[in-house]
Amino acid sequence: MIKKALIYTLILFLLYNLVLYFWNPGFISPQGFWQDNQVKAQNYLYTDVCDDAENIIVGSSMSFRIPTDSLPGFCNLSLLGENYIKGLELMKEKGKYPKRIFIETNFPAGKSKDGLFYDVLYNPILYPVRTYLPALRDGKQPILVAASATEECAVNHSIEEQNRDKYSAIFKKLIEPTPGIGLFQGFEVEASTQDMKNQLDDLNTFILDLESHNTEIIFFEMPLYKTLYYSPRVESIRKAFNEYFSPDKYTYLPKPEYDEYQTLDGLHLGKDEVERFTRQFKMQVDSLIQAGK
Image 1 (tube, helix red, strand yellow):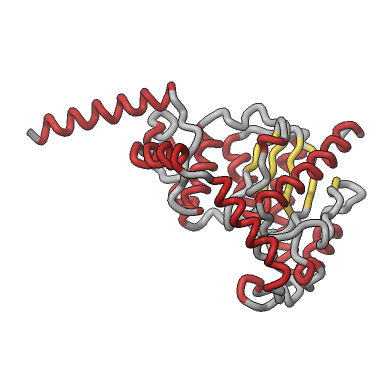
Image 2 (cartoon, one colour):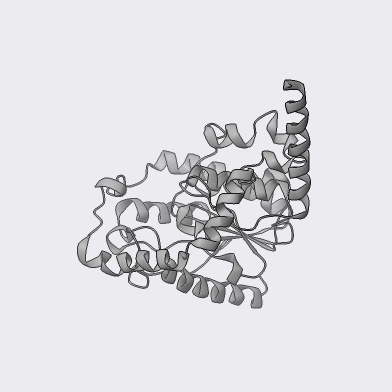
């Protein structure tokens, strides 16, 4: 009885993998941001979803929401609660180098292959096997696929976005993000000079590798609320980038001013605002391309 059950389970598992080869479910609702990151990372590593992209964006949750459906030739490897390092490591792991890479500078960080993200992604057994058995990838489990398909049909996500934007509309009147308080811890002091050097040294190892593959390096900054825009931490980060990666050698997109966009929480843009930012971003990129970048 147990033997038969195992055989039937194996047959069903193999059939489900076969189904996934021919039908790749487009909408997946992850069970939290940690799984959202795994879904994006595994889709990038195991599929050709970004193989033809001339431009790749790497950064934090601030640039995570930039919609690439309105940016032809772009792939967004920004991750929730992370920074550009993980996106760069994914790209180096796959060995696919774009024509241009856009690096968000808001939250610099050094190399770190420790932690749950790497333990799950590079599991010594599952990492190679996922290439052949897509059902083992995050976001491909049958229950999650079925639940996501049901949610896509039953839930109006535009209402959810509208509610977020209503919150955004009253945010300025109700909350004044204060450096050093709550979510904004650390903004009240300058970034450590030594920490910035270590982090930018680590970034430079990736940049040298990218440049050896003829990839154009482009830095950009996401909008912040006004009390954070000129905070000691943000100003010191800008200064460190400009000193380490001189604008005479590297391209920097024009910084968005604090009063150009309205955030949901001081850091992240709502749906309407991120779409407006993306239109401006596209205009700047088009200008670079026309200039031969």
